[in-house]
Image 1 (cartoon, rainbow, N blue to C red):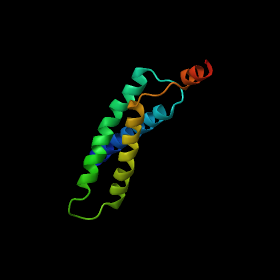
Image 2 (image 1 turned 120 degrees about the vertical axis):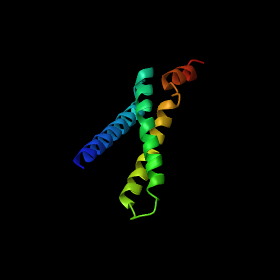
Image 3 (image 1 turned 90 degrees about the horizontal axis):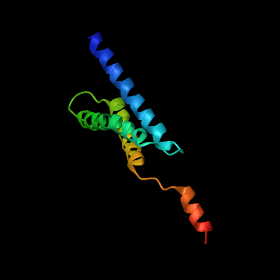
Length: 103
């Protein structure tokens, strides 16, 4: 009923918020503290799992859910790429430039 639709809307809003937060942290040019990288990753792991299982479930017999498949197939790589970017160790470009000019 209406309660399930409300819960689904909250879940989708939370997932999109986590995805946007993680994406913003991943493209940030400033160095992030550890919690600034760990928190978005922890929020994106459920999004990743939800989209993976949702995409697999969208192939069950029945009427074709093409919109769901497109959403799952779009959000999953975005969340995965954001997690990878946040987990990678960033090179400190200021130190590399200083060392190359020192000698």
